[in-house]
Image (cartoon, rainbow, N blue to C red; front, side, top):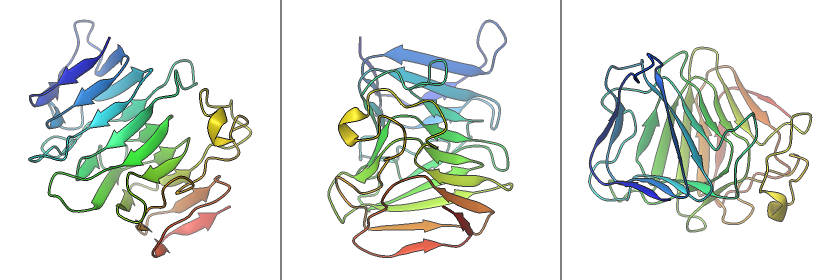
Length: 219
């Protein structure tokens, strides 16, 4: 079934004492802010066979804007994506713990209009990984800024040596080797900060504007 959270969501420590919260469903939607109860303590895993959506483009739907999450992982079950759905990011920013907080998107990612009506989405954390395709909602409109930290890597595409991501055969990456960025709808621009490494496992990265990589690039 679908999960739609229209009010601000705060993740706390579960009954078993674990700090990761796992949501399982068809479409999982956060139409408001999403934060940890205690900054840098709680993490989120979303396993959705449909779309996982952060923000609705109205008001201030930042993720981790008040209290960063320790990590965010979408569509992960035993190391494989669980369905052909997408992660749609309509939030202005998604923030995980500085130096240690990873963001791992195992399904296709689509950047949408954010909370301020502007076109820039900023992802901030340690390792930030896109294991499938990455596109704009409207070609040439959305802008991506990635700020990794703590010696983190920004990775576009899945290394073909890893298990294939399920549900992405239509995008031509059944072997994990063709996780194009902007292949369906080009992003306006991409900028990464000067941390350590940007890793390109994608066959193509397409923007309508500039691409600026302020760190070492590994192909």
